[in-house]
Length: 532
Image 1 (spheres, one colour):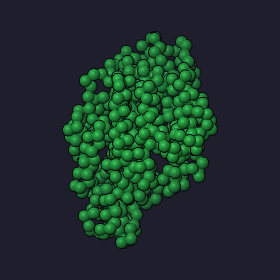
Image 2 (cartoon, helix red, strand yellow):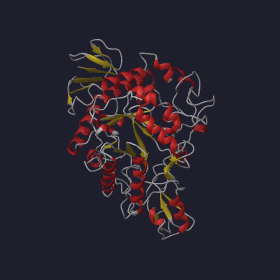
Image 3 (spheres, one colour):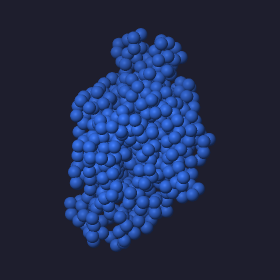
Image 4 (tube, helix red, strand yellow):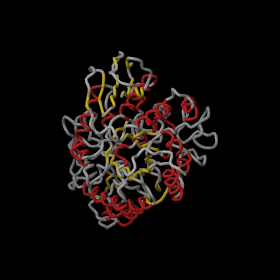
């Protein structure tokens, strides 16, 4: 069957440099068997939607064998598919169908920790202190309490004591023990995992917690910042990603991690020049982020600064300037993202309702015009907002551990058709694993597909137009001064204008190729336009 997509110029092995990659949260994309949970056959059945949308690739969150304490990010077997999501043959079928449609496939890899049900951790518990099995993880003796003051990202101490008195480190949930990457068995195992999936045809990997893996060997206490709490390892919210006072983080971003990615680079090259890896690396400076994408390491790193920026022309301009400056010395392509499975959906972050949706469309359109790759999160093409999930339906381990509202609101299964839940998410009439709101009937793919003014139509138009210049407009961005409340820049023949202010502004000369909302000779507030 002929591919529907042909966005990458012939002969480009570095397809990711200007790709649009769509994140599929496997539990919440499409359900094939009616159990209320998304699965691999469900994804395969909906791949034509992604091809018609106009993306270049999909990134699928973990579908490996797992007890699902962290919804797949607690892996018990990296070389198999959890029965909840299907079987290995379903993964093969998904990859083959995606390739038929011109879509690349990126899979999630979780190297910082395993599940406590992984065969290695079970063997470690059975073997006891001082055993080779325990040397694969971060077990320590400490008779007077936890070995140090480190805190779990999910809340509480990052150490759990086992029956024989030793403690093991888990920077996330207690069911996710951290591996000891100084043990040579650990990198050897993951190189084998890379080859296993490369041999099955995957085109790349998204590396979870790529800044983790190694911890300072001394396991010293962390110097606690203001507020009396150790940091969680998340990037600060300053627009430039440059903290005025860098946090003390002995558990994150250690120099030894770069040797791992140099080895992985060689493995990817063995499989072919068109294989890639993108780092989820929460770092404190643009320079430390850029270190992950040096020519002999990973190909890209997520740039969360765009996601974290406030709605302001100055903030967006600073993100563009600092991001491009960071990746230029190492020759890497930047990445841009507004939403993912760990953050509040951007329509809601921008105020919700009509204003939030207008700003979301404008920010997306501006992001798509920048050089580099854009990562979209499932459902944003429908304009979905964050859902206020009732406490009895919340399943995020961070909520279960701390009681604070977690990430369930951005993980609600997306609506495909019909007028009531489950909106064709799967067969049957029962609500899926997280209930869908009643007001989503007008937001389904089916409802928006025939509406030329819908958010779905806007995304299709924007991605179609982007293909005309993504690979030809060059990587140089020139900021243009059109006033304090306006972000404007030129990239090759394209001029992009984003009005972050409260009043309409004059558009510069040029043909309007696309706008995120209605325009005439002036650009309304919360609107973006591309001009040629």
